[in-house]
Length: 544
Image 1 (cartoon, one colour):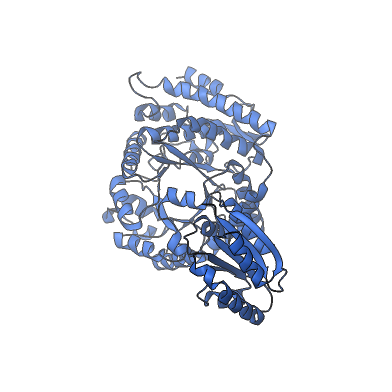
Image 2 (cartoon, one colour; image 1 turned 30 degrees about the horizontal axis):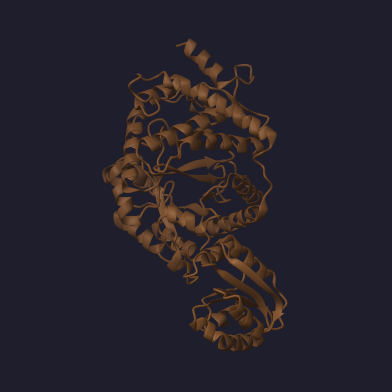
């Protein structure tokens, strides 16, 4: 049955911008829309609703609240018969009048202006919806993505050094309804030593995040999120006892998805007790565990190379290996993490080319049993210290990210260079990001087809295949080299996978040199001249 919505400004009100925006969103949600115009008499609205067999009637009034209250009373009385026959009614007006309308027990939903477009769209997508996000918000990631489409869901990291302050902050964030996923930032001791209190150091309590020390702590934080728009919760895989942590996350916070590295969070970066080969095996096993539970998995892998000034090609190679391993170990819904601005000196155009290369490389892995969801974020190290400049950077970066149509945007708070985000910082950052997203969805220029971007994308893809050939030769033919922990470890130890900031690392070589040239991060020789990854690796292996 066709869904028909009628929109009008009631009585003598001529302000129709809100009505037009409401109808535009209704069209996006699949409705047939009919605009009756400004200053429409009650009788005409009722007549047209009957004549058009309307499913929903949206009316607005933005003049004097006292006059509007009387008008709405008359409208509710005249339209009561339609309501009894199943027609739904929505109202939009000034905050004062909206509050009065909400007490009338007539309108199915009331808007007071300023509601994010995705919130209005969520109401319009479900004619059975009450308009109450707390009742409607899906509690599984993929369901929530589909519910919010074409808007991406929004995620933000949050975790303060004080447990109670974090709990109160989660309540504030949930009540603000500005995001869909709170990514719990837990301190390093919780990530590494949760089940080993004897290894915990009281002096490190709260270092890097919230000091959760029991399952009850997680349950308390989850309970704090059961308000507002019911945001999902997620956290990291930890750096030891991976399966035990996974089981607890599922039981305590209904984890939306897990972030797992492939090469990191071990002795190579000093964030865990495992050696590289052992940690790769552990990470593969925990991927398999989440896959069996039907819980999505993100490999927060490529940006760890990017933040250490690895070349664009190595960034893309690690992104491919991440998706490849996720599929091989049974993940059903894979979240491809795409951190822009890493390194910060990238140009926007060449940053976009790198991400397009990653997408083109991993897309062939998709199947009915392996779905890929794109998640973008602003570079962690790219924010300026000045807050005004940082706000501008956040807005510009999110707008650029929208060019690849992500399903998830990980908002990185604009205060990142200065301090860990407070609840207010999270709310403000997400509010700015939502505006950039809305602007892009209204109609952004097509940036991805730029010839220079496409040329660079193809160059990266070609070099990625060259690097993968070298990795392929590291394993026995009977073993898949892209999942073989020994081959992957050897690729790092030999320097096939390498980054300048890994110099003097106990596991990696750290002998690669990179520079940002014409907005791209590339490997260079000892004279600072650009060199292809194939040539770099060939020279490297000749010396072995």
